[in-house]
Amino acid sequence: MIKEKVQARVLVLGAGKIGRLIGFLLADSKDYYVYLADLAEPDDRIKQIMQETTLVEMVSLNAKNSDKLKSFIKQYQVDIIVSSLPYYCNASVIEIAKELNLHYFDLTEDTKTAAIAAEAARSKNSSGKVFIPQCGLAPGFISIVANDLMKHFTELESVKLRVGALPTNISNSLQYSITWSIDGLINEYGNLCQSIENYQEVKVLPLEGMEEIKIDGLTYEAFNTSGGVGTLVESYLGKVKNLSYKTIRYPGHGQKMSFLMNDLQLNHDRETLKRILENVLPRTFQDVVLVYVAVTGKQDGHFQEENYVKKLYPKKIKGMSWSAIQMTTASGLCAVLDLVMANPGRYRGLVRQEDFLLEDFIQNRFGQYYEQA
Image 1 (tube, rainbow, N blue to C red):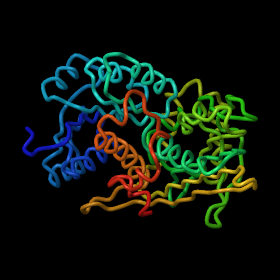
Image 2 (cartoon, rainbow, N blue to C red):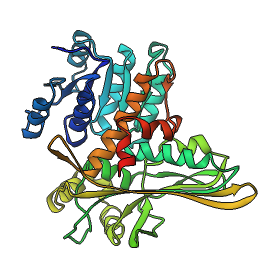
Image 3 (spheres, rainbow, N blue to C red):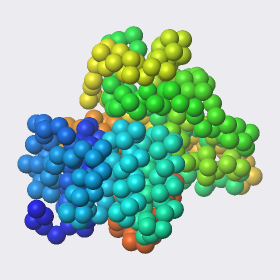
Image 4 (spheres, rainbow, N blue to C red):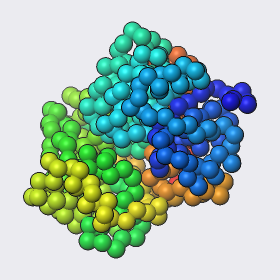
């Protein structure tokens, strides 16, 4: 199967919006051979990817069939497993990575899944390998940026992390279009959110904490959502007075989602909510990703503020157009994977996003997308 010498063999589980781009970026670097696994037949975009590179191979695998998955990994000597599956599918994949001593990466925003990965990383069988959950944009890149800014202060007062993936054009009362996973969207809107208030860890309600935020003269809203903060609360507990993560949306979206999820109690019937959203919200690849981090504290005895603000847009690679959320998420995972493989022995066990230096990330061939924005 493998026609050229490569650095590693990667199994990407899930060939959806993000998984296919992860596979393409890694294979296009010519350092990775990628098995792109899904039960669906290859669509036109995946066929186009396979025409552009011989280092991507589409395979039919059911991630729920652990025996067949393990057999495939052993037969084709897979080194790395990347899960771009819905968060609720990752627990069994983590167990396989632990059992077969593989490097593991995923995109989950789900805190329970991240905890399972952390436990697996402590296994003796996982010696020398990494478990890196919560890759991508938020969680992911946002933690790397925040950690970098926080190092500039001798005392930390507040850290605000704000991220949004928004359609560039909207035509519905929810002020939103589907740019990524509906399952992930509902999960982050419906679960308790980690924050730090007055040096103490607290759990705050999702869709609450509404605030107004202005970027480039445009007004947005931001509210609490779950998972985007990654492990920053754990890493900085007792070191920063206030730390919070919120999702950026167009004004009015949060109130309407709160009506659906709280007033109509659809947070307790997520399958119904998913069907509603899939039926009424259009999908779009015309999007913009907003990244906003603000840190305040003491520098040289003075109260100061530092900010990181970016707008990221869709990109065309070899004639193929990719949305901003695809690019930010896929390149975020590929960059940390590439840094791990380029520095043998530097990273082991559970690796947090904030363990990566911002300078290393943006100088990486995949992370450069963030600087080019």
